[in-house]
Length: 324
Image (cartoon, rainbow, N blue to C red; front, side, top):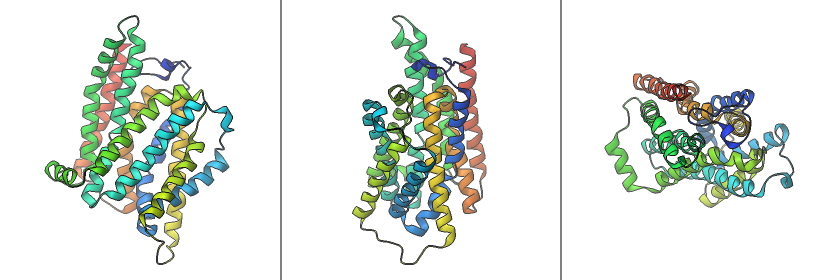
């Protein structure tokens, strides 16, 4: 099935889009939803930096067993260099920014900044693939029109993410501004990471030539996270963590590594149109899963935010269908 419509299809990158690959990419969003709650359990038992390093180390082992990489010589060098740098930077930036957040409120705010990546991905996809439909000398105006078409849906869905993830009392903008002024680095870092991830998702498939580098990049992330842990000066847990913490460690590793493997396959061979719009569901599903795993109640603002996310995604889908 070829898809060159809507806010952009992978066909615009010169290959036929696979419905199966799109489904695998969508599975990544569902699998990632388990990540936040499981990582929270691991961090509480092992510590933030040690827990992250251990999760990615176990993830590397899983990928080597179930998703072994091709020989390095088969990967395009440009993809390894640029894609690898973006992948490692994103993971390191998110880990560092969460570690540098000084309060629970600022941690939520940092996570909200990270969740700007679906909006960035939608807008980048529209800009990149919108040009392919403009034709001739109208490529610049075609990009602008494509971005403007998806902007209303992106705004609605992003507002939904803020409402859904902001907690029972919503997001206190004045307090958030104060936190940013006091400690801007984690916010800047996570914003840069979110942008890097959206660039990775939109641009690296054309560089990859069909090769998924997830299993190549993952060990690099693990090395960086171990370096961060040792540099932080944090030690090992005073007592051996309970069994449920070790199970959460395995579950978090499976969620993260499996999610990235599915996402890598999806963006290489699936529809960027569908994946970009569906990516808005990531923070909502993550909040639901975290509430279940951590025993939290979901408030009315969450459900209102979830409806806005769905409405924004459906709006972009409808605009894409009208364009046909």
